[in-house]
Image (spheres, rainbow, N blue to C red):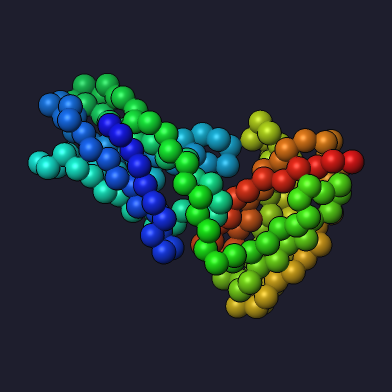
Length: 174
């Protein structure tokens, strides 16, 4: 299986061909989460033409890593190659400066709910802090976020606003 893909407006389309479908019963489409673990985001059954397309309707902002898990009748599976695709959606939000020493500024162009949540993870995927704000829906959001007492290094974030989830990383240098 040779997996490839492309951004299509607000979605990511994945494509692959399979020539060894004798015992394959389904394909599980997987994407890495913020903890750097693959998780299923969809599933397709076997098709006669052996050419497949899957659309990720809600890609994460930034880099998305995908792979396909082909599962046979006995539950034995193989994986496709992994691909990374960057998703950008007209800069719906900004987090800056990066690198930072102890403070980040968070901006959201138009909020989708009355709650904004900002989660910070260390390089091992362990949650180290959560910031939560109650806001007016549909407005521009800007907030200064003081980081907890954390050391130098690379950290990952997840910004959640309604059904929108954005992921990325930032560097702390003190």
